[in-house]
Length: 317
Ligand SMILES: Nc1nc2c(ncn2[C@@H]2O[C@H](COP(=O)(O)OP(=O)(O)OP(=O)(O)O)[C@@H](O)[C@H]2O)c(=O)[nH]1
Ligand SMILES: [Mg+2]
Image 1 (cartoon, rainbow, N blue to C red):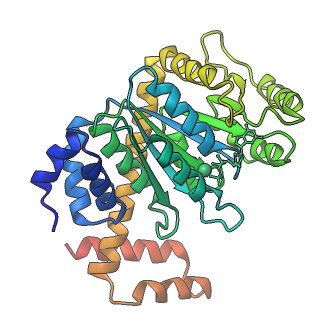
Image 2 (cartoon, rainbow, N blue to C red; image 1 turned 180 degrees about the vertical axis):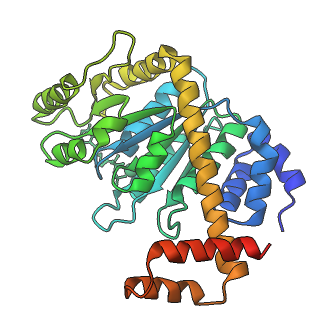
């Protein structure tokens, strides 16, 4: 058992060990995690959430590290949540994150946490959202969330940040895929990282051509395309400036974004809890799986199955 009454004030005071403990609670989906969020929620809403996404190995972690240093130089505090990809062909993340932790280890104004995608079946965005709340409550001014832009979960996370930074890399072919995969629509700021490589101009032109397909109203934000070299920090002040410009661009937009985030989180939580209640309290062990099998075997249609499940869950109250 965790003594939440003791833990919460320490989280609010920004104590690193308390923050780490609190994030573990929300990550493990413990009932204490839910109580913790209840306890800190009224202290949240001040942090600005920056989502950074892009293909594996784009240099996101390196960029986030530089951006963190850039933000710190003006005295503001930073929390970072890095979602480790489980994909076997990446794996650079863990090493990158370790290096990063060393770089900011002595700085109490920076808190970095890696979260694995494994074991979070559908709950990743909830866990990430809760971890962001913890960092927000702990007084971090900026919370950066790094994800590999592949799964729906990751896209959902980025969509609900206050600003979405999409990183692309020249000469990989990933760029074209990313554009096709709908990443275009979620970007508020484009960053072409590894601009020291050939093809940065060409990629920039490709993204620009894509933007040109959309008609922007005079007061509408048009995503800028920045070039960075994360390894040297080149272009990082410009990235910070672009984030600030986006933030200043419209409070209305931000309120809408935050409402989307609240709606998303509430819907997700209700469906998750409803399913959990159904599986744990209403159905016998294995019953849900048996239903799935029957639907798969075409013995039962999913609509009838869902209606039946809902009726039983409601009757069980
Ligand atoms: N040449 C060059 N290399 C870079 C640049 N930015 C990052 N790298 C290198 O690219 C590799 C991957 O960097 P990471 O920061 O780990 O990339 P990532 O996008 O976080 O990777 P995953 O989290 O595994 O998807 C590292 O070897 C970096 O040193 C850059 O601007 N130019
Ligand atoms: Mg990384």
